[in-house]
Length: 236
Image 1 (cartoon, rainbow, N blue to C red):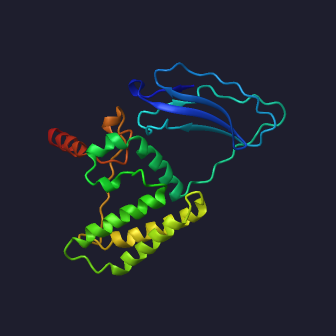
Image 2 (spheres, rainbow, N blue to C red):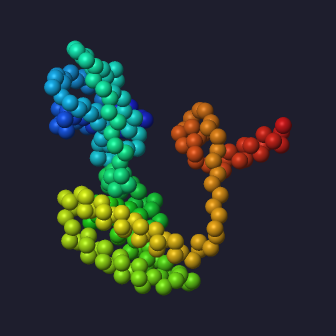
Image 3 (cartoon, rainbow, N blue to C red):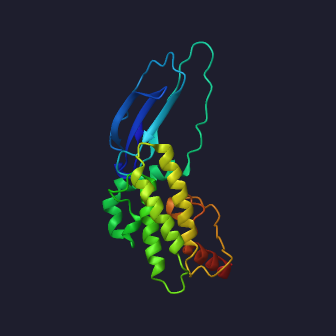
């Protein structure tokens, strides 16, 4: 196994889980480390999971491989199972974990510090409520914003519930998160600058080559592509 981050900068941890129990961990490995070998007896297991974490510092440069991983089976071959799609709350929790690891490097680049993950954010529900409060305050300072007193009262009620609900109660916290996200959407659309009813999305074609040329983010539009196309049309 290897962690092939660019210039050896990646940090990751490989884990093998059987029926929800940790069977093996590589510990933190980097792109400079030698591959690690593992050979496990999986007899009697009903569910096997191969997991890679981001090593506690975000997933930047984490290019990982389960090199030549295989199962040696006697008897009937096991079947594969597709894990359930993660909820928005679960996705946000993973993003928070990544952002916590990169907080120091991101802070100097961040225009509004409210966008960062704070130490006081116990989970995505806390983060959304805090950011929604900042959004509400900002809109209140903008001329032309409608009266948001009702939304402000709803936000205070949600904050009170959040203070009373233990983060260990994942189901209750996720339900709270969903309500906070819906309220944030309502408040965001009260922005007086949203005085239009059409949005144009621009996509560019897939380009081969380096990531900087676009194949890493093929839905991302780069201005220099328009320049290149213009030059090609002019010279052709």
